[in-house]
Length: 298
Image (cartoon, rainbow, N blue to C red; front, side):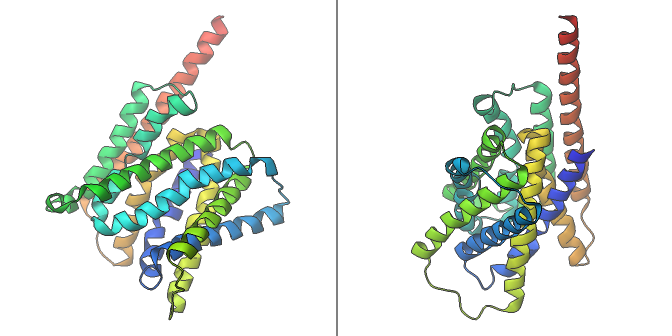
């Protein structure tokens, strides 16, 4: 039951990031937003670790720097530019390939076997994302440039690989893993920001600063922590399915904030995605039962 609670929590925390991001980028440059959210998230987790008296192993920092580069810094920077060039619906559909890429990379990185049920479940979830954004895709495909599409796909691959690296090398407490990855990412983004966009933003409103703070504390810091808990508990493939829930929750939340009735496509998408999650876990339970049966016979 905990894994489903974590999954929904991640969907809520990351689904709200679209609201905070939209407000923050109106007055703050993209690279500063990326650095600021990582820094605020890292500071939040450092405080939690201090309160819980958790101490990490300094020998793992090179690994965390690698995970941060793959799972945060590179996709943050690529998406900051690419998502300005294409419609958000196109970006959401491409990012919906994260679970599929996770499934395909898993045998190479963590030795997890690819099963037909798992493959079908991620395809079903991707169908839910496509149903959600299909009405918005009409008329935008003819004006697309290949470069932003490739960069978004590379970002999706980075996120998939990052989850697998966390599963393989993140042997410390999930809170420490989340804290150290965000800290390493904040330092990397700080270097990029200071050299690439050294001009400090001026005349930033309190509303935009609060949006950035909320984005960092909740969507980034706490969201990353819960995500690491889910990877530890249920594995990267199941955790990657949160990428199906995030746009749906963001879509429904946006409709609620704007006092609009969500379209039927959003509800159908939610049904398909929940079906994908259920199918994935049924396949996992079946595989586990089969393994236990073979072990008892031997």
